[in-house]
Amino acid sequence: MKFYLFTHPDLLSTKEREKIRQTISVIEQGTNTNNLVTGLYLSNHVIRYQGTAYVQNWMTPKQFHPRRGKWTFVQKWPVPDDLPAQFKLIRLHMEWNPKKYPKLERDIYHWEFQYPAFKDHLANLFAHELHHFRRHHLGMHPKEGEQAANRWALEHVKNLGFQVTGKKLKIKRIRKQITLLESLFHVDPFSDFRELKAGQSVRIIRDSRKQYQNQTATIVRPIRKNSKRMVIQTSDGKIWRWPMNWLQILDKPPA
Image (cartoon, rainbow, N blue to C red; front, side, top):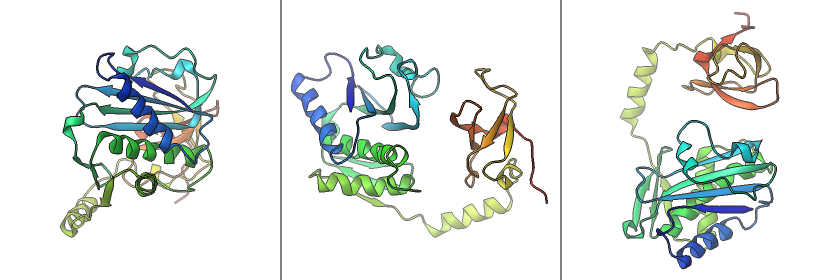
């Protein structure tokens, strides 16, 4: 695996940089990461840490800098000149402030984690994204999603000696009842899309890059409940999560 650390030159000492590299190296143990590139971005202030695994399609050096979205800030650093011709990519974004630890963190999947030190936080975040790499690139952890990634990451880092604790929070029954009432009175604008099956076709009626405008795409899998995007495959074989309000149904199933 190739690992790149992006930060301000005076933010970390040489010793701190080496400790971070050692943490990443320990977590990847037991996983074939020959085709993986990982970029860690450290900032003075981060509202919420984040990680993204681009592991379903091959990436090229030209794609290392995103053109839009939450990761466009990485363009302030140059593209590494020793990237492989193709690779799978993990991006991590964290705040470098060891004084903020120990830290209690709740993620969007209703998990609560406690991190005694920065290295524990980094280890767990990287392990979570590594689970996605193992699933989509190495064929491991079949059909496992975000909840399973959290469980595996927590077990993995604890087995390696990191002092992370975590648990899945229970959602209060009253919240579930409110959600049920909301669903009963909610008009779903994508109800027709939710009837579609894998292999059926849709037309792309909007593409901000104009690359696939008015082209036909194939549905990869049925959409999940409450999702506003559909997983489709374009004519060049690439897989996308496309906004459904930018798609048109071509072959609606019979009633």
